Image 1: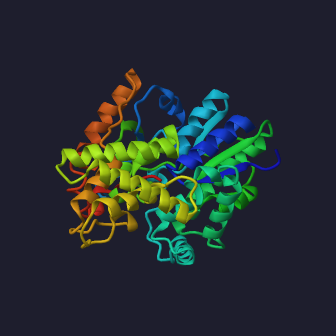
Image 2: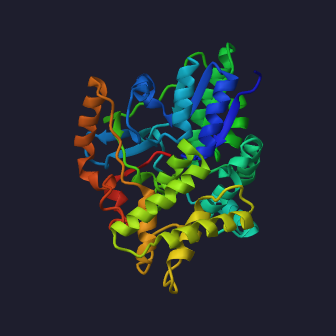
Amino acid sequence: MSEPLIVGIRHHSPACARLVKSLIESQRPRYVLIEGPADFNDRVDELLLAHQLPVAIYSYCQYQDGAAPGRGAWTPFAEFSPEWQALQAARRIQAQTYFIDLPCWAQSEEEDDSPDMQEESQALLLRATRMDNSDTLWDHLFEDESQQTALPSALAHYFAQLRGDSPGDALNRQREAFMARWIGWAMQQNNGDVLVVCGGWHAPALAKMWRECPQEINKPELPSLADAVTGCYLTPYSEKRLDVLAGYLSGMPAPVWQNWCWRWGLQQAGEQLLKTVLTRLRQHHLPASTADMAAAHLHAMALAQLRGHTLPLRTDWLDAIAGSLIKEALNAPLPWSYRGVIHPDTDPILLTLIDTLAGDGFGKLAPSDATATSAKRCHLRTGTYRNLFSGGAYLKSLYPPMDWRKVRCYIGW
């Protein structure tokens, strides 16, 4: 292969997870390079143990002089994450697997005042398609199962249009330069095909940048920090923290729905959604009759046909349930039609609906001495931020802004 196969994905997209799994199994590359913290490469095998997902890599930096706050970041994995499926598929074909992104402590902290070209490009697409938000647009373009055959070319075109000629901000340029060095190193080995799994925003840039990298005999090395302790651990993670509504901008909405789609496909996911929502509403003593849910099913099928979907997608079901169960005028917009703090006047039925699909599951590490020690130490370091993972406080904490100047913890993707 004279070119690396660079697969631009959206993090935690079931459609992208299927694509990545299929490509690795069919192409059988020698190298699988994954956007993820490169300081975890010596311990990648820990991710291949029998964990209960979601789990996350927690990377941190603690300055010894205390003059600057420490830094930390989580890189989460769910079963429907493309990066997770890449790891599993690479193991099955015995490919050499590496994370190729800079860990948080190696990334620049300088502020960048350059305009957000990704946001501007996204806004243009939304205006052209008349979609509520980027999540609805993504579902419409890529999560319909009938689109799987054309998915590789559709994703490449979408991300090329999204990136355009933008060089990216300073942080993205720094990260992409490091990832490009890894691609260049793998290609220079000249002993097998190279497949790269990365966020779609990076893919067009990496396709050009790797050619310009100087030849490297050894794998790219991470910079060292003076007077600082750095490290990374594997830790459990919660379903709710994967939700884009929780402020995780690289997340997908409704992690429970995404997991159903990954495991069973759209048809069974829709059936499970109706059953689960009906049960939860009744537990909360909210109005939800069998007739209402039957009407919601018919409504969802009609919306899917109207919108050109083979089977109802996420917002088809949500819009249908809202239209069938809520009998009075709404005092706030539908919570899945926007991002950000949920409106205080949102109907309780809608709050229950999004809370149900956000999930209440919590990951668990496999019973291994290495990972158990890792989790214990990580718990000690992150205990102050336990509320970040708490499922019960999800709606309550959705969403007072956190003081990141003190915490300096964020999501790696």
